[in-house]
Image 1 (tube, rainbow, N blue to C red):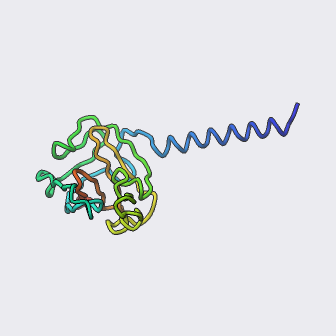
Image 2 (cartoon, one colour):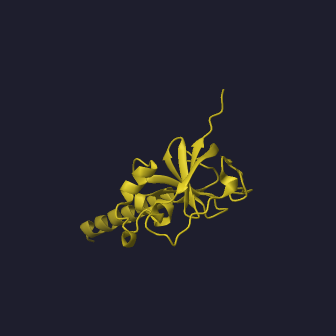
Image 3 (spheres, rainbow, N blue to C red):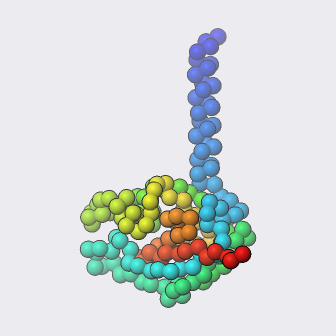
Length: 168
């Protein structure tokens, strides 16, 4: 019996199990809006997406119903305008690097966007990875800039939401 070979195989097996567990924890569906998204938010800003610079063929389209919209992420539902409203969310939390934000829109070397970190910081993101969330009800992906500010992109627009704190 080769003890070194058995020990190496056992160690490799533990490493594979640990890697699988880390993947599950990083992109795991959850019944709750966790990792900082739970609660009430309000859209406070809409701006043209940074990838529009130098691309006149792309047109931003602001959604009028998003102006000052309130969105609530609850364990059993999402309350908000039609794009957000959801009766049975299947929250999925993921950690993204700056080049993964807004479906990779901050990185477009063909159009002069070579530094996704610079673009992300200009929007207000401070550090990687960025906690991001899908609700399972739409394709909107929400990104936390900090504990009280989140963003999402739609139709070449970036929308900023701020947390609405309930007075106690």
